[in-house]
Image 1: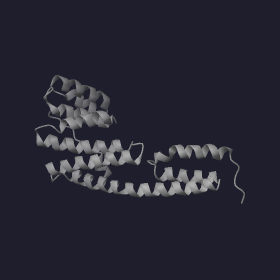
Image 2: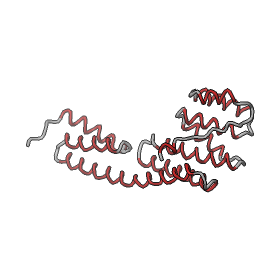
Image 3: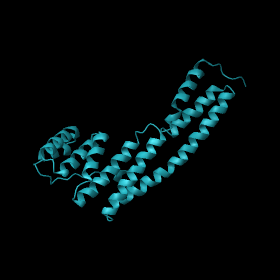
Length: 207
């Protein structure tokens, strides 16, 4: 489930009294919480729970690069429960980061990394239903990428054929529909921009 995929856990029993950071987090001030957890982590370099919490705050602040680094570090914890939660949150972050990819290759790479993380989380705790559900969800999403690629290929072929007939407006409509249905098909973005420029100056085809 997508809702479960966005759920993140916060370890509230970390040392160094991170109560103020937790208050910031619970109040929705995620950037402030991130900064406080990072400060605490620098003072307690052996406590990976603080790094984990920093990653959680970074995720909520949509700072995915920082979240990826923090959760990756937390997976090295000797505490298997923390390690399992870190893999779960790492998978969440990789999935969300993938949605910002500029093309299908980047999307697939991020989501495959997410499935690997969820798989590690499931192996560490087979009773974690959220991790199990997320693993299945993202695996199905990856399966859809092949269909998106085929749809994009066919749309490009149809637009090319319309362009050969100098029906630039039809070609533009085809590419516009492609982007509406498949926003990740950015590899054709320059082609679509060129079609728009041509369509604005080209006369309409005669019936």
